[in-house]
Length: 438
Image 1 (tube, rainbow, N blue to C red):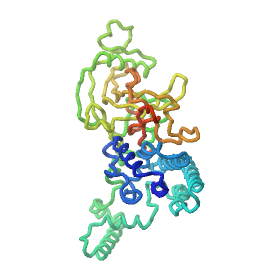
Image 2 (spheres, rainbow, N blue to C red):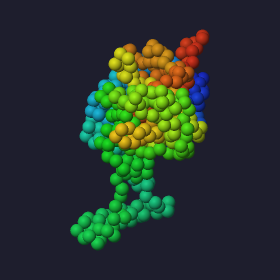
Image 3 (cartoon, rainbow, N blue to C red):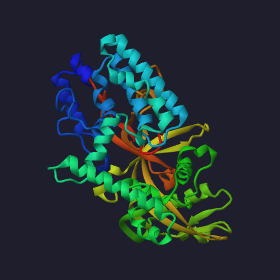
Image 4 (tube, rainbow, N blue to C red):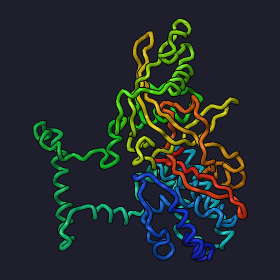
């Protein structure tokens, strides 16, 4: 952004338009907010690191795409794609390879468009990010600038803001003594029990939710939604999280919805036949009744992520998701939708009762591949981090009910216009990758 402002690619009028577009993008509360004026300071210098990440991954493409020329779009697309991969907590090696290639392409494009004098030390550092990740793990796990990391550690210590140097030295001495005690405590059972409270947790704050299960368990859960062609979830499998209120217990489901639920079970259990309870007398022999009672929930917690629904308007900003489907031609595609509510429903099979954890979703209509990947470069669909869809929903059908295990991730929805004289209005879909890159 600073480069484009210096080169006068983004005029004050453009910045005002960007601000207006940014205000139309509604993000979940846990993502954090940008400053009231996105162009704070000189060349966006007022952004914190977390605000920069949010701006690049969620806002940048939607609000600047039609304001940039082709070379600048290439720079932006490659940078955003690389950031999408590198900021995740778990990054595969093939993801690092792609991110490195994207960064190299971006730097070459900057040199070609703006000249070698614009290749700053930070751009040179980008060439080594993937190498550092291979040596030390994902960028999420360490600071790239050791001085900033040390300032962050020292700043986290409590002090009186008067004699900071002496107080920090005392804190370091105390910690050294405690380290010696905890080392000796491993050989003394009584001292070990006394000093147990001093041992730090593996993860603290919002990350402590991951202490309940391992990365392998979380990865296995995510594979159910990412690799549906290898086997879709039934809906009764355990999941690393829980339903949250507001709760409506023993809700009587409407007849039309109950028929959709019966169709879902018939599709899930191919060797069994399900019908709503009110139609069981006219059903074939050995049909299984689908009871009309269910428990409705407004929210779902998976790890540290909270998925909302329109059942409670307070959490509607977190109600937009992505999910994958196997189409009639056996291809796999991703669709955005809006969660209406979560529910817990039990069916009584011959082998016993089984509770399913499900979600009712309305799916947005496709705008066609040409419009959908409007913000791509070189006909590469992976080069854009946003997709354009129509703001209308498909008709209600069986696919509106899916297991919560099939939720791929949350997404952010904004507004996007295509065309100058008679602009057509669409919604922009931006996936939120929190732990795994999707």
